[in-house]
Amino acid sequence: MATEILMPALSPTMEEGTLAKWLVKEGDTVQSGDLLAEIETDKATMEFEAVDEGVIGKILVAEGTEGVKVNTPIAIVGEEGEDMSAPASTKGEESVNNQEDTLSADKDSHAAPAGASDATAPQKGYGKGDAPQKAAPSADGSRLFATPLARRIAKDKGLDLSQIKGSGPHGRIIKADVENAKPQDASASTSKADTPAAAPAAKGAAMATGPSTEQVLKMYAERDFEEVSLNGMRKTVAARLTEAKQTVPHFYLRRDIELDALLKFRSQLNKTLEPRGVKLSVNDFIIKACALALQQVPDANAVWAGDRTLKFKASDVAVAVAVEGGLFTPVLQDAEMKSLSALSTQMKDLAGRARDGKLAPHEYVGGSFAISNLGMFGIDNFDAIINPPHAAILAVGAGAKKPVVGEDGEIKVATVMSTTLSVDHRVIDGALGADLLNAIKSNLEDPMGMLA
Image 1 (cartoon, rainbow, N blue to C red):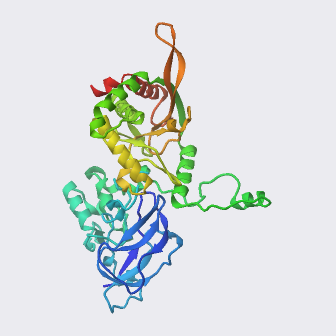
Image 2: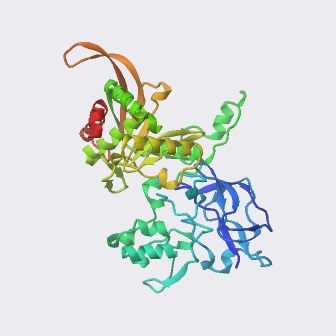
Image 3: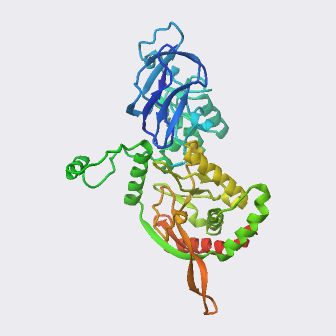
Protein backbone atom coordinates (compact mmCIF):
# COMPACT_ATOMS: atom_id res chain seq x y z
CA MET A 1 0.00 0.00 0.00
CA ALA A 2 1.40 3.38 -0.98
CA THR A 3 2.47 5.60 1.89
CA GLU A 4 3.31 9.25 2.11
CA ILE A 5 6.75 10.24 3.34
CA LEU A 6 6.16 13.37 5.40
CA MET A 7 8.53 16.23 6.12
CA PRO A 8 9.83 15.22 9.55
CA ALA A 9 10.34 17.39 12.61
CA LEU A 10 14.05 16.80 13.11
CA SER A 11 14.61 19.19 15.98
CA PRO A 12 12.45 20.46 18.83
CA THR A 13 12.01 23.94 17.36
CA MET A 14 11.55 22.89 13.75
CA GLU A 15 8.30 23.93 12.08
CA GLU A 16 9.58 23.95 8.52
CA GLY A 17 12.75 23.03 6.72
CA THR A 18 14.58 23.04 3.41
CA LEU A 19 14.70 19.89 1.34
CA ALA A 20 18.33 20.44 0.45
CA LYS A 21 18.97 17.39 -1.70
CA TRP A 22 17.28 14.18 -2.78
CA LEU A 23 19.56 11.14 -2.56
CA VAL A 24 17.09 8.96 -4.50
CA LYS A 25 15.01 9.40 -7.62
CA GLU A 26 11.61 8.14 -8.74
CA GLY A 27 11.68 4.44 -9.50
CA ASP A 28 14.53 3.68 -7.07
CA THR A 29 14.08 0.74 -4.73
CA VAL A 30 15.01 1.52 -1.15
CA GLN A 31 15.62 -0.61 1.90
CA SER A 32 15.20 0.28 5.55
CA GLY A 33 18.12 2.48 6.57
CA ASP A 34 18.86 3.80 3.07
CA LEU A 35 19.39 7.54 2.90
CA LEU A 36 16.55 9.36 1.18
CA ALA A 37 17.35 13.05 1.44
CA GLU A 38 19.32 15.79 3.12
CA ILE A 39 17.11 18.17 5.08
CA GLU A 40 18.17 21.50 6.51
CA THR A 41 16.51 22.05 9.87
CA ASP A 42 16.59 25.04 12.17
CA LYS A 43 19.81 23.61 13.60
CA ALA A 44 21.76 21.94 10.82
CA THR A 45 21.60 19.80 7.71
CA MET A 46 20.95 16.14 8.44
CA GLU A 47 20.27 12.98 6.51
CA PHE A 48 16.81 11.40 6.44
CA GLU A 49 16.60 7.61 6.31
CA ALA A 50 14.13 5.19 4.78
CA VAL A 51 12.18 3.08 7.22
CA ASP A 52 10.61 0.34 5.14
CA GLU A 53 11.53 -1.15 1.82
CA GLY A 54 9.68 -0.09 -1.29
CA VAL A 55 9.85 1.88 -4.50
CA ILE A 56 9.98 5.66 -4.66
CA GLY A 57 6.84 6.19 -6.73
CA LYS A 58 6.65 9.96 -6.76
CA ILE A 59 8.72 12.85 -5.45
CA LEU A 60 6.34 15.60 -4.39
CA VAL A 61 8.81 18.29 -3.29
CA ALA A 62 11.76 19.28 -5.45
CA GLU A 63 15.21 19.54 -3.90
CA GLY A 64 16.18 23.03 -2.91
CA THR A 65 12.64 23.86 -1.84
CA GLU A 66 12.62 26.08 1.25
CA GLY A 67 9.92 26.51 3.86
CA VAL A 68 8.50 23.00 3.63
CA LYS A 69 6.15 22.64 6.59
CA VAL A 70 6.56 19.72 8.98
CA ASN A 71 4.13 16.89 8.06
CA THR A 72 3.89 18.05 4.45
CA PRO A 73 4.04 15.02 2.08
CA ILE A 74 7.39 15.09 0.27
CA ALA A 75 7.28 11.75 -1.55
CA ILE A 76 5.26 8.56 -1.98
CA VAL A 77 6.67 5.08 -1.49
CA GLY A 78 4.96 1.79 -2.27
CA GLU A 79 5.26 -1.54 -3.99
CA GLU A 80 6.54 -1.92 -7.52
CA GLY A 81 3.75 -1.58 -10.06
CA GLU A 82 1.37 0.03 -7.58
CA ASP A 83 -0.57 3.15 -8.59
CA MET A 84 1.02 5.97 -6.62
CA SER A 85 -0.41 8.91 -8.53
CA ALA A 86 -2.94 9.78 -5.83
CA PRO A 87 -1.83 11.24 -2.50
CA ALA A 88 -1.29 8.48 0.02
CA SER A 89 -3.42 10.35 2.55
CA THR A 90 -6.50 9.52 0.49
CA LYS A 91 -5.83 5.82 0.92
CA GLY A 92 -6.57 5.68 4.61
CA GLU A 93 -5.54 7.59 7.63
CA GLU A 94 -4.02 4.52 9.21
CA SER A 95 -1.32 4.29 6.55
CA VAL A 96 0.70 7.10 8.13
CA ASN A 97 3.33 5.94 10.58
CA ASN A 98 4.81 7.80 13.50
CA GLN A 99 8.44 8.76 13.27
CA GLU A 100 9.09 9.68 16.88
CA ASP A 101 11.67 6.94 17.49
CA THR A 102 13.23 6.89 14.04
CA LEU A 103 15.19 10.04 13.42
CA SER A 104 18.54 9.59 11.87
CA ALA A 105 19.47 12.19 14.47
CA ASP A 106 19.08 9.52 17.10
CA LYS A 107 21.81 7.66 15.21
CA ASP A 108 24.07 10.70 15.54
CA SER A 109 23.68 11.73 11.89
CA HIS A 110 22.67 15.02 13.46
CA ALA A 111 20.93 16.85 15.51
CA ALA A 112 20.22 18.30 17.86
CA PRO A 113 20.33 19.11 18.79
CA ALA A 114 18.90 21.34 22.49
CA GLY A 115 16.74 24.19 22.52
CA ALA A 116 15.94 21.38 24.58
CA SER A 117 15.36 19.26 25.14
CA ASP A 118 15.26 14.22 25.61
CA ALA A 119 13.95 14.25 22.19
CA THR A 120 11.18 16.59 23.01
CA ALA A 121 9.80 17.33 19.59
CA PRO A 122 7.10 14.99 18.39
CA GLN A 123 8.63 13.46 15.30
CA LYS A 124 5.94 13.02 12.69
CA GLY A 125 5.68 11.42 9.33
CA TYR A 126 7.31 8.42 7.73
CA GLY A 127 8.00 6.10 10.61
CA LYS A 128 10.44 3.43 11.57
CA GLY A 129 9.69 0.46 13.73
CA ASP A 130 6.23 1.73 14.62
CA ALA A 131 3.32 -0.19 13.21
CA PRO A 132 0.38 1.65 11.64
CA GLN A 133 -1.83 3.32 14.21
CA LYS A 134 -4.90 1.41 15.29
CA ALA A 135 -8.10 3.25 15.94
CA ALA A 136 -9.89 2.78 19.23
CA PRO A 137 -13.10 4.38 20.45
CA SER A 138 -12.71 7.46 22.61
CA ALA A 139 -15.00 8.43 25.44
CA ASP A 140 -17.44 10.10 23.08
CA GLY A 141 -17.50 7.15 20.69
CA SER A 142 -15.29 8.76 18.04
CA ARG A 143 -12.22 6.98 16.74
CA LEU A 144 -8.99 7.46 18.67
CA PHE A 145 -5.62 7.06 17.00
CA ALA A 146 -2.41 6.37 18.91
CA THR A 147 0.90 4.72 18.11
CA PRO A 148 1.58 1.31 19.69
CA LEU A 149 4.45 2.81 21.68
CA ALA A 150 2.17 5.55 23.00
CA ARG A 151 -0.40 2.94 24.00
CA ARG A 152 2.19 0.92 25.90
CA ILE A 153 3.48 3.96 27.77
CA ALA A 154 -0.07 5.08 28.56
CA LYS A 155 -0.90 1.65 29.90
CA ASP A 156 2.21 1.59 32.08
CA LYS A 157 1.40 5.05 33.46
CA GLY A 158 -2.28 4.32 33.93
CA LEU A 159 -3.38 7.07 31.55
CA ASP A 160 -6.70 7.35 29.74
CA LEU A 161 -5.82 7.97 26.09
CA SER A 162 -9.18 9.60 25.46
CA GLN A 163 -8.13 12.40 27.82
CA ILE A 164 -4.86 13.11 26.00
CA LYS A 165 -4.56 15.51 23.09
CA GLY A 166 -2.55 14.06 20.23
CA SER A 167 0.08 16.13 18.47
CA GLY A 168 0.94 13.66 15.72
CA PRO A 169 -0.38 13.64 12.15
CA HIS A 170 -4.16 14.04 12.09
CA GLY A 171 -4.26 14.28 15.88
CA ARG A 172 -2.61 10.95 16.61
CA ILE A 173 -1.34 10.40 20.14
CA ILE A 174 2.40 9.78 20.05
CA LYS A 175 5.12 8.97 22.56
CA ALA A 176 5.84 12.58 23.49
CA ASP A 177 2.16 13.21 24.32
CA VAL A 178 1.96 10.49 26.95
CA GLU A 179 5.44 10.90 28.41
CA ASN A 180 4.56 14.26 29.97
CA ALA A 181 1.01 13.35 30.91
CA LYS A 182 0.11 12.43 34.48
CA PRO A 183 -2.97 10.55 35.69
CA GLN A 184 -4.27 13.58 37.55
CA ASP A 185 -3.88 16.00 34.66
CA ALA A 186 -3.96 13.84 31.53
CA SER A 187 -6.74 15.92 30.07
CA ALA A 188 -4.45 18.90 29.99
CA SER A 189 -1.38 17.09 28.75
CA THR A 190 0.46 18.26 25.72
CA SER A 191 3.45 17.13 23.78
CA LYS A 192 6.88 18.07 24.95
CA ALA A 193 7.19 20.18 21.88
CA ASP A 194 4.51 22.43 23.36
CA THR A 195 6.58 23.17 26.45
CA PRO A 196 8.64 26.32 26.73
CA ALA A 197 11.83 24.29 26.20
CA ALA A 198 10.75 23.59 22.68
CA ALA A 199 8.75 26.69 21.88
CA PRO A 200 8.54 27.01 18.11
CA ALA A 201 10.74 29.62 16.59
CA ALA A 202 9.15 32.49 14.77
CA LYS A 203 9.27 32.30 11.01
CA GLY A 204 11.97 34.31 9.36
CA ALA A 205 11.77 37.84 10.66
CA ALA A 206 8.36 37.46 12.29
CA MET A 207 9.80 38.69 15.58
CA ALA A 208 12.25 41.13 14.04
CA THR A 209 12.15 44.79 14.89
CA GLY A 210 13.64 47.83 13.22
CA PRO A 211 13.70 48.73 9.54
CA SER A 212 12.21 46.30 7.03
CA THR A 213 14.32 44.40 4.50
CA GLU A 214 13.25 46.78 1.76
CA GLN A 215 14.15 49.83 3.82
CA VAL A 216 17.60 48.49 4.64
CA LEU A 217 18.29 47.53 1.00
CA LYS A 218 17.28 51.00 -0.09
CA MET A 219 19.48 52.56 2.56
CA TYR A 220 22.58 50.83 1.17
CA ALA A 221 21.59 50.83 -2.50
CA GLU A 222 24.69 52.83 -3.46
CA ARG A 223 27.12 50.58 -1.59
CA ASP A 224 28.62 47.26 -2.60
CA PHE A 225 27.52 44.35 -0.43
CA GLU A 226 26.85 40.64 -0.51
CA GLU A 227 23.51 39.25 0.63
CA VAL A 228 23.87 36.23 2.92
CA SER A 229 20.72 34.14 3.33
CA LEU A 230 19.86 32.99 6.83
CA ASN A 231 20.04 29.26 7.41
CA GLY A 232 17.64 27.50 9.75
CA MET A 233 19.94 27.78 12.76
CA ARG A 234 20.53 31.50 12.31
CA LYS A 235 16.77 32.12 12.01
CA THR A 236 16.14 30.15 15.19
CA VAL A 237 18.87 31.94 17.14
CA ALA A 238 17.55 35.31 16.00
CA ALA A 239 13.95 34.49 16.86
CA ARG A 240 14.59 32.86 20.24
CA LEU A 241 16.99 35.51 21.51
CA THR A 242 14.71 38.32 20.35
CA GLU A 243 11.88 36.61 22.18
CA ALA A 244 14.05 36.20 25.27
CA LYS A 245 15.06 39.86 25.45
CA GLN A 246 11.50 41.03 24.80
CA THR A 247 9.68 38.70 27.18
CA VAL A 248 12.10 37.70 29.94
CA PRO A 249 12.64 40.31 32.70
CA HIS A 250 16.42 40.09 32.97
CA PHE A 251 18.47 41.47 35.81
CA TYR A 252 22.21 41.08 36.31
CA LEU A 253 24.47 40.19 39.24
CA ARG A 254 28.26 40.45 39.07
CA ARG A 255 31.10 38.97 41.11
CA ASP A 256 34.86 38.75 40.67
CA ILE A 257 36.25 35.31 41.49
CA GLU A 258 39.86 34.60 42.47
CA LEU A 259 41.22 31.59 40.60
CA ASP A 260 44.71 31.02 42.03
CA ALA A 261 43.69 28.15 44.31
CA LEU A 262 41.72 26.57 41.49
CA LEU A 263 44.58 26.90 38.98
CA LYS A 264 47.04 25.30 41.42
CA PHE A 265 44.64 22.48 42.23
CA ARG A 266 43.87 21.95 38.52
CA SER A 267 47.59 21.65 37.75
CA GLN A 268 47.98 18.98 40.43
CA LEU A 269 44.96 17.02 39.22
CA ASN A 270 46.05 17.15 35.60
CA LYS A 271 49.42 15.60 36.50
CA THR A 272 47.57 12.79 38.24
CA LEU A 273 45.13 12.33 35.36
CA GLU A 274 47.74 12.54 32.60
CA PRO A 275 48.19 8.74 32.33
CA ARG A 276 44.44 8.46 31.68
CA GLY A 277 44.56 11.05 28.91
CA VAL A 278 42.31 13.45 30.83
CA LYS A 279 43.07 17.16 31.01
CA LEU A 280 40.72 19.32 33.04
CA SER A 281 39.89 22.83 31.90
CA VAL A 282 38.81 25.75 34.02
CA ASN A 283 35.41 25.40 32.36
CA ASP A 284 35.06 21.88 33.79
CA PHE A 285 35.44 23.34 37.28
CA ILE A 286 32.89 26.06 36.45
CA ILE A 287 30.36 23.44 35.35
CA LYS A 288 30.86 21.49 38.56
CA ALA A 289 30.69 24.65 40.69
CA CYS A 290 27.40 25.70 39.11
CA ALA A 291 25.90 22.20 39.42
CA LEU A 292 26.74 22.08 43.13
CA ALA A 293 25.50 25.65 43.65
CA LEU A 294 22.10 24.66 42.25
CA GLN A 295 21.99 21.96 44.94
CA GLN A 296 23.10 24.39 47.62
CA VAL A 297 20.45 26.93 46.54
CA PRO A 298 17.67 24.58 45.37
CA ASP A 299 15.03 27.27 44.92
CA ALA A 300 17.12 28.66 42.05
CA ASN A 301 17.18 25.30 40.26
CA ALA A 302 14.00 26.03 38.36
CA VAL A 303 12.54 27.09 35.01
CA TRP A 304 9.64 29.29 33.95
CA ALA A 305 6.66 27.31 32.60
CA GLY A 306 4.12 29.98 31.66
CA ASP A 307 1.78 29.91 34.64
CA ARG A 308 4.09 28.10 37.06
CA THR A 309 7.71 27.25 37.74
CA LEU A 310 9.26 23.80 37.62
CA LYS A 311 11.75 23.12 40.39
CA PHE A 312 14.26 20.34 39.75
CA LYS A 313 16.09 17.92 41.98
CA ALA A 314 19.01 17.23 39.64
CA SER A 315 21.40 19.84 38.27
CA ASP A 316 21.16 19.70 34.48
CA VAL A 317 23.61 22.33 33.25
CA ALA A 318 23.68 23.57 29.64
CA VAL A 319 26.91 24.91 28.17
CA ALA A 320 26.98 27.20 25.12
CA VAL A 321 29.14 25.89 22.27
CA ALA A 322 29.90 28.09 19.27
CA VAL A 323 29.44 26.36 15.91
CA GLU A 324 29.55 27.62 12.36
CA GLY A 325 26.50 29.80 11.80
CA GLY A 326 25.22 29.76 15.37
CA LEU A 327 25.48 27.89 18.65
CA PHE A 328 24.30 24.83 20.53
CA THR A 329 23.75 24.42 24.25
CA PRO A 330 24.34 20.73 25.01
CA VAL A 331 23.10 19.70 28.44
CA LEU A 332 25.10 17.77 31.04
CA GLN A 333 22.46 15.96 33.06
CA ASP A 334 23.01 15.15 36.74
CA ALA A 335 26.17 17.23 36.66
CA GLU A 336 26.31 17.45 40.45
CA MET A 337 26.80 13.68 40.63
CA LYS A 338 29.65 13.43 38.12
CA SER A 339 33.37 13.67 38.74
CA LEU A 340 35.40 16.43 37.14
CA SER A 341 37.03 13.92 34.80
CA ALA A 342 33.63 12.55 33.75
CA LEU A 343 32.31 16.06 33.12
CA SER A 344 35.43 16.91 31.12
CA THR A 345 35.15 13.82 28.93
CA GLN A 346 31.42 14.29 28.34
CA MET A 347 31.77 17.98 27.58
CA LYS A 348 34.54 17.39 25.02
CA ASP A 349 32.38 14.75 23.33
CA LEU A 350 29.27 16.95 23.25
CA ALA A 351 31.17 20.00 22.02
CA GLY A 352 32.87 18.02 19.26
CA ARG A 353 29.64 16.49 18.03
CA ALA A 354 27.89 19.86 18.29
CA ARG A 355 30.44 21.37 15.91
CA ASP A 356 29.99 18.42 13.56
CA GLY A 357 26.19 18.69 13.72
CA LYS A 358 25.88 15.23 15.26
CA LEU A 359 23.97 15.91 18.46
CA ALA A 360 20.64 14.21 19.07
CA PRO A 361 17.73 16.34 20.35
CA HIS A 362 17.80 14.90 23.86
CA GLU A 363 21.39 16.09 24.21
CA TYR A 364 20.71 19.79 23.80
CA VAL A 365 17.16 20.34 25.05
CA GLY A 366 16.34 20.92 28.69
CA GLY A 367 18.41 21.99 31.65
CA SER A 368 17.57 24.73 34.12
CA PHE A 369 20.79 26.73 33.99
CA ALA A 370 23.36 27.64 31.34
CA ILE A 371 26.99 28.73 31.13
CA SER A 372 28.48 30.93 28.41
CA ASN A 373 32.25 31.24 28.63
CA LEU A 374 34.01 33.75 26.38
CA GLY A 375 37.12 33.92 28.52
CA MET A 376 39.12 31.90 26.00
CA PHE A 377 38.44 34.69 23.49
CA GLY A 378 39.97 37.31 25.80
CA ILE A 379 36.64 38.87 26.80
CA ASP A 380 36.83 40.44 30.26
CA ASN A 381 33.10 40.44 30.99
CA PHE A 382 29.73 40.48 29.24
CA ASP A 383 26.01 40.01 29.84
CA ALA A 384 24.51 36.81 28.42
CA ILE A 385 20.91 36.45 27.26
CA ILE A 386 18.84 33.84 29.09
CA ASN A 387 17.79 30.86 27.00
CA PRO A 388 14.09 30.25 27.88
CA PRO A 389 12.80 28.48 29.84
CA HIS A 390 16.03 28.62 31.88
CA ALA A 391 15.94 30.94 34.87
CA ALA A 392 19.58 31.99 34.72
CA ILE A 393 22.79 31.96 32.70
CA LEU A 394 26.34 32.61 33.90
CA ALA A 395 28.56 34.73 31.64
CA VAL A 396 32.23 33.98 32.25
CA GLY A 397 35.10 36.26 31.30
CA ALA A 398 38.85 35.72 31.11
CA GLY A 399 41.02 35.31 34.17
CA ALA A 400 43.62 38.08 34.47
CA LYS A 401 46.24 39.16 36.97
CA LYS A 402 44.92 42.06 39.04
CA PRO A 403 45.81 43.80 42.31
CA VAL A 404 43.42 42.86 45.10
CA VAL A 405 43.19 43.71 48.78
CA GLY A 406 43.59 40.63 50.96
CA GLU A 407 41.75 39.90 54.19
CA ASP A 408 44.74 41.27 56.11
CA GLY A 409 44.49 44.56 54.23
CA GLU A 410 47.62 43.90 52.20
CA ILE A 411 47.57 44.43 48.46
CA LYS A 412 48.46 41.33 46.47
CA VAL A 413 48.32 40.14 42.87
CA ALA A 414 45.68 37.51 42.10
CA THR A 415 44.19 35.88 39.04
CA VAL A 416 40.67 37.28 38.88
CA MET A 417 37.79 36.14 36.68
CA SER A 418 34.76 38.36 36.14
CA THR A 419 31.34 36.67 36.09
CA THR A 420 27.85 38.00 35.42
CA LEU A 421 24.70 36.08 36.32
CA SER A 422 21.72 36.97 34.12
CA VAL A 423 18.53 36.13 36.02
CA ASP A 424 14.84 35.78 35.12
CA HIS A 425 13.11 37.84 37.77
CA ARG A 426 9.90 35.83 37.37
CA VAL A 427 11.67 32.81 38.86
CA ILE A 428 14.53 34.18 40.93
CA ASP A 429 14.48 37.33 43.03
CA GLY A 430 17.53 39.43 43.83
CA ALA A 431 18.48 37.86 47.16
CA LEU A 432 18.05 34.33 45.81
CA GLY A 433 20.13 35.16 42.76
CA ALA A 434 22.82 36.63 45.02
CA ASP A 435 22.85 33.41 47.05
CA LEU A 436 23.32 31.38 43.88
CA LEU A 437 26.18 33.50 42.56
CA ASN A 438 27.86 33.55 45.97
CA ALA A 439 27.64 29.75 46.10
CA ILE A 440 29.28 29.52 42.67
CA LYS A 441 32.04 31.87 43.82
CA SER A 442 32.63 29.90 47.03
CA ASN A 443 32.85 26.60 45.13
CA LEU A 444 35.38 27.97 42.66
CA GLU A 445 37.54 29.62 45.30
CA ASP A 446 37.58 26.40 47.36
CA PRO A 447 37.94 23.79 44.59
CA MET A 448 38.93 20.95 46.92
CA GLY A 449 35.61 21.39 48.68
CA MET A 450 33.82 20.42 45.48
CA LEU A 451 35.29 16.93 45.77
CA ALA A 452 34.18 16.39 49.36
